[in-house]
Length: 251
Ligand code: NDP
Image 1: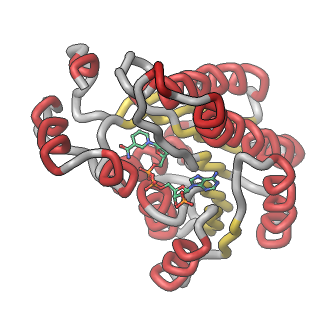
Image 2: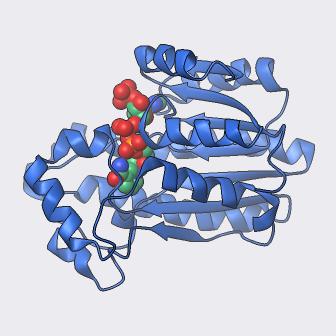
């Protein structure tokens, strides 16, 4: 991709899954990468796997003060920021009638409030330097109704609208887009789906398989690059064709 070499990249939820694959991809592009995650062990693992990382920060994105402290640390490593991959998120499979207020708030706190806290701190730094790219993690669940995922669907739909609103307010200096993956095989999926359920998911995807974290990482790399300089305020679906025919409602 053009224009990623030496760029300063900050990835939340980068300890494993899509975030870790994205860290690896940006390192391949010659970028400088700092990863944030709430899981200390995952950060230790990734630092061993990717010694070229410019740093790791342990923090919970749903805690606004912790995010402020994390950006203080980031400023120490980078003095500015070119690209934010706002990826940290959690899922919750539960029927609508059984979700408690605490469970509802937890998902919204991480997936929507956390994305807001991190994006706002990133945007302040990017505006000061006059440029930047913010990529928020959505989901196909933001775009279609999926039973048993009310809190998750709502949080991700919020991320899509947050993305559009930010893009309007932050243009022309900062580009803001969202990425909306379908089924990507990570710990998140493995925790909620039995092998039989995963096979059933595969059979609903026109391309006949689940997506790979590296494929989402490639989309992030494109959207962060100079090749996407005229792209802002959009959400990009990467789902093997899953929602093209409205198949999502069968999930
Ligand atoms: P994983 O669960 O594999 O990885 C998520 C990482 O984020 C974990 O290391 C997790 O740490 C960390 N994290 C969770 N909550 C917080 C928090 N509050 N603060 C900081 N870090 C946190 O997930 P995926 O890689 O599958 O998903 C990444 C993103 O992609 C999420 O936003 C998810 O909603 C989205 N997505 C995933 C899809 C999929 O099919 N996998 C499809 C569509 C969207 P910990 O161990 O502490 O929880």
